[in-house]
Length: 79
Image (cartoon, rainbow, N blue to C red; front, side):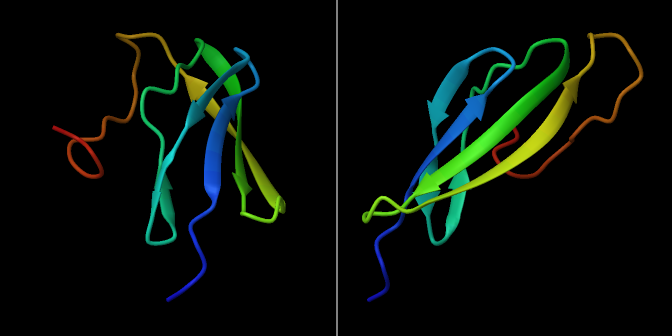
């Protein structure tokens, strides 16, 4: 059997909130991550059982409803 899954937390540095992600089979999923209108700095931090961490950061831009945008029609967790 492989190593236990790490703990993964998703931080929105723009709003200052944190969400725990569900981890399984080397993947993670975080739902209900609030986004401010405009640019949001998102950091994902994975921590293993020994306290080792790895961090990745991305910028996500939320646009106001009614503006031109791409819309996800199906996929991961979509209804």
